[in-house]
Length: 371
Image (cartoon, rainbow, N blue to C red; front, side):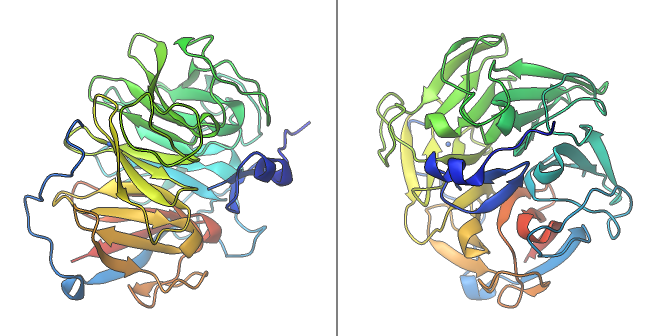
């Protein structure tokens, strides 16, 4: 029987934003120096930032039950509630196609293929296309080419090897709501609770946004799971790792200085965690259930503001430079003021500066050109 989670139960558990993640999952939806460093390149005034939004891949619609599972060319491919997104630095994109319970790949030439997952919600390791996921929401690329997956509904962190084998990296939860938990220790016995974000540092350590445990966890390259930041109490509190508080962490990412950026969704905040676990808040007003954050080469950063159906561009200090999108939920390409998004979730900045966004509600992958 297919596994499903009740959206109502998830809301009761603290998931308050209605962003579909498929398989019945819904999102409720980085250094001892807590102040971001000045950008190497001066950021232009907001009025001088030119923005063009286009569709990179996907032919879905904004209907609630729309979306699909079709591989092929960018124009004909279909996604369902695409969520987290990552790049391998070679122009290839990897997407947690949450509603389809699979991981997709968009090649540098624009072809869309299924990298792993049978499409049936469940928990099974093995050959990539026979493996099963349950509402995966985030992906990251390790230096050895492994695709790391936050398998949210299974409360586990999974890996897809370059050879096409899926394995469980850490976590011992079972599929379904309320079947996760919290435990540090060896990877095989550690427990997570609806993890919705993953990031990998240059040494191969994996960081996890352990959403319902209100913590950021660390999986060492040797396989031991520890708590990196957060005391497990819901709130908005900066400071050392052991006392800091979060509220429904979403996606996470590293910047070039080794700081970990966190979309703190229910707090409507963007948080920074230094390598020692010290937490600071960079943005704490004006956001509506932010789902992800990504930094640019000049030190500025972009936020996928899911609940507002927009992207927000900030300078390195957290000053708002530009709102991208009209704020009206829908699907339309165009300029910053004219374009429309529908629950944007994942965001990644490519090496040549282009910004790619998973527009979950329109079941598409969008491209944002900033000049």
